[in-house]
Length: 179
Ligand SMILES: Cc1cc2nc3c(=O)[nH]c(=O)nc-3n(C[C@H](O)[C@H](O)[C@H](O)COP(=O)(O)O)c2cc1C
Image (cartoon, rainbow, N blue to C red):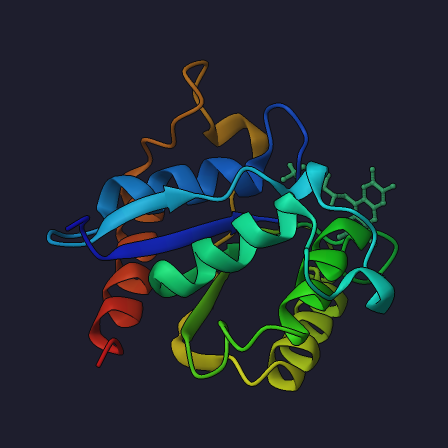
């Protein structure tokens, strides 16, 4: 049997993404027996269309729903685009509405924004959509941890001890919420 997993979903597909680096740090801090699983299918998801939300589902949607179903918890990190959620992440979340996999699933987020508004719009949208999907939002695991691009090493890792400690607290809060 495979290890119970924590599914890590980045709202950015950009090479060198700050959000993906934050989730990389979270992955390093996931405690045993849990295993981190990076969701890599964001760019391959078709645009949500209720006409496609029936058997046979698009393979990318099958894989998304399986990844969520298998996970013990979900951790998101996303940029803000134009004051709200990136379309790609909103699209992913729309695909979770027809499935019940995310219902009650412990879910948190790390907001690494260093922008003037702290990406407040995107995380307000994220809360609205996750609430709509009935995800189990874990308040202690929904945290702002500002990270600049300069704090990401050439190896893509975040080594700053303070950032790692704060990310570790989020992971611990999420794990503690798993029943
Ligand atoms: C088209 C576009 C729109 C953006 N809109 C916002 C915004 O509304 N608010 C904000 O704080 N940052 C905005 N940004 C900045 C990104 O959120 C920021 O570069 C972030 O680090 C990108 O995340 P990533 O490094 O994980 O790709 C925007 C960037 C782009 C390219």
